[in-house]
Length: 594
Image (cartoon, rainbow, N blue to C red; front, side, top):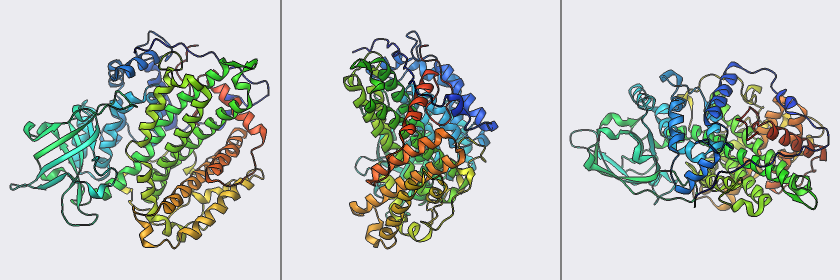
């Protein structure tokens, strides 16, 4: 079935009530730091390269995206355009010849691609970033130089971590790297669900290097498949998927493949620690990038609500429809705030981001999937169409379900948090001071990310929940106190968790504690972002956003005032009509058919 060229939905009708315009929203950040301006210029430039998404003749437009998805093929024109734009430079640190200085810049650039086609964004290159981060974190200078040279030279890298038999439990990984008689290792075993493995030259491999029990039994290896004898490995057949249909997911099977001694990344036996440190970057960046998918879904749903007429008026004028759209916008901005703060923490608080990164991955992925579902209810039958102007929605919904699981499942993220709960409860909750304001000033200048400073354990440090105290306006106080009360209850339950409840085999009740704490962390991040802005739009958003987070916790709270919802809806309409992104950056997009 070939999808015909979609036509853009009709423009949305603005509400009659006077509400803030985009110019007022942009007043949240009157001046841009040089890095922020450069990043937004790069993102706009990439969006311009992709062109008008509604232009039926555009080989990178929505019609072509749908066609490629139906065929299960990556867009050749898209890959060519991204190569010409030098996208690989975004994955290589500036100190090694690339453009990567931190998560914020990478997120803004990659969102431009994910708003258009998440399959292209994942399939073309973000996998190389996932594979490279362990090397940027713990690799030797020679390893970093070699991998940087490969990526900048047009080669790809694959992250070979997953084994279907063991899922996210890295301690049970079975692929082996045994000592070879003449030195180095012989790798034997298989990995599955590896994106781009069939066309990658470099492979980051997590392997068992010791039979001893404990956390020092595995190592991270960097392999150059060009150096491996072709009869010692084979690429396994591709795995078809319902979402990200064009992704080249496959596996690789090694049979005593010789690997040199200097392929070990970091110390031998330290693979788990390297992974825990490196994954803080990828767990923060990937969900933040995928916010671009929800941005497009919200844009499509808002267009439908303005076009579709029920009971003699646009769907957008119906209270329930407005509540759905403003709720999705509020959740998108929560995702942007939480992932943005987590990304800045990697620079400013690198020794305490293990919990924040895992919580961000969990909460952001959960909120995006939920918002996508709510928007699908608004679209009704159109959310299932595979053609026409709304055919994109179902593709993005399928893609979002896959990307939410990519690299770390919900259980894996919560498992990272659980062992740290007692120390957090004793040392930080309701005791720590809020982090400095620079943590919450999204888009402001940051020092270059130093991967070597990342720590595997936060050691009980949490200054993010303390940011709830910054919500000091009278109208915010009741909601603030709801979350502070929840944190007090969590402290009582977590401070003396028995040892058996501090492991991956913890009970379901303990996983719920980690989930609830993650939502309180999100609320703290939102309060901090509000405190850094303190404008009417952000206040209205915080009232709605905290209420929705409280609903997820089942906590009673006062409803937001009606004018808060009206203000959010007005901003949604204004941004869509002016083709501005829905995140806090609110930067211009290629014109959407107008």
